[in-house]
Image (tube, rainbow, N blue to C red; front, side):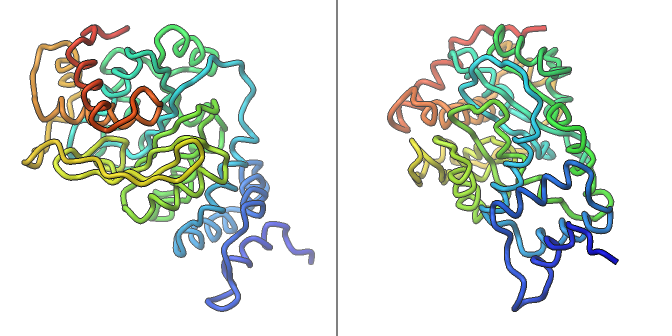
Length: 327
């Protein structure tokens, strides 16, 4: 009986505490390529994902898996994108105010490509559903995304547009009982090769892992921080440690807290987001979150040189926003 080709990768990870080792970037790229092509059995896939999860993924493994997905991306001419914004966690305790941050950046002339998935975790409000309630439809295909980016400087793309197997792999969480490596990998997709990217983590020790993975992938500018609920949304009640890349070189900076009280849990109804944007509702805490998150992106994209300038520009942008939502 001939050994299955994918068994080689499972064996590397699973030979025991002394003989097992992480995959190299090239090995993980090849393994992920076989997964995307449907060339592995369900048993192999479950074993592979669980072994990666137990030991936690290395920067090389994240980069290799992301490379495989990038290599399989459909070809479509797209307008230039300034900022890549992955949104895969969903919000459970507070409204997804980062959506307003992204719209604010678009008003400031930055073209933002946001991509995400929904339904993989219970009791969360996902970005796609919130955007629909705001009257902003997710792109139905890459052509529609290109039009949204060109006309509005903002587009949201469901993960499934990039490869038909990605949704299936993400939903393995319901079967395995734990998240797959795809939850981390997909944050590095950057499907339109934007020069700047934002990444949020649940656990602070993952910041350096994501920074190093991005560097392996050739990303020049990255800001990675512990966001609220795992989304790219600043927790303004405490200092925010941002690790990343600036012109390809690592940096680490601390953004000061903007509030001296912890924000309360808020209504997850997206209609509240629309009321905030239109000026029909006012909330100083929510505005601090929106502008504080946007400020990190403004500095990352080179619009300003200092943290103080970024905060000032973001607050000014909020005050002067158009207060209308596209439909």
